[in-house]
Length: 123
Image 1 (cartoon, one colour):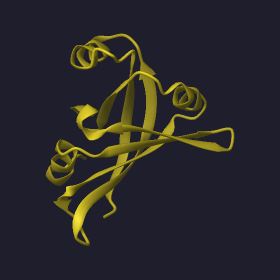
Image 2 (cartoon, rainbow, N blue to C red):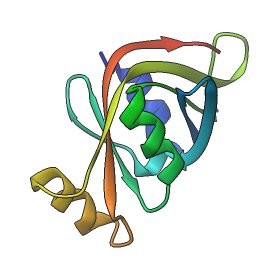
Image 3 (tube, rainbow, N blue to C red):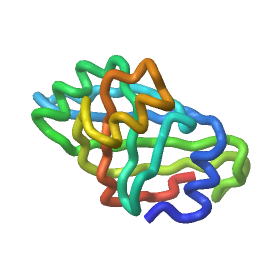
Image 4 (cartoon, rainbow, N blue to C red):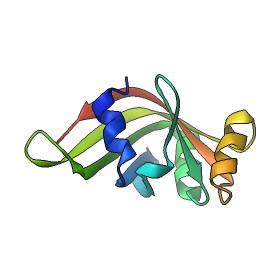
């Protein structure tokens, strides 16, 4: 699911937008490419400190969209490559994967796990 080009993009710094939606309202938060971890073929782990509104929305509707990219990698139309990711999310605050993320990001009090259903290059 995460091909070589995608992994090259996330290895460069860029912003990640995470979109959640419930109660007829979308909510967007940001993080950084360098915070993402990929423990399996279709999973992403993201360290979390805040994101309280995102968590409340995910508890009602776990479908999320993410966009990410970098201008450092050539894209379809010139400088810059970006992706749209669809999946389902849940927040974790214990367990081996939480402990792994907490070791790298001491400020994290939760982990956002995204089980990815699709990855599409947009630019």
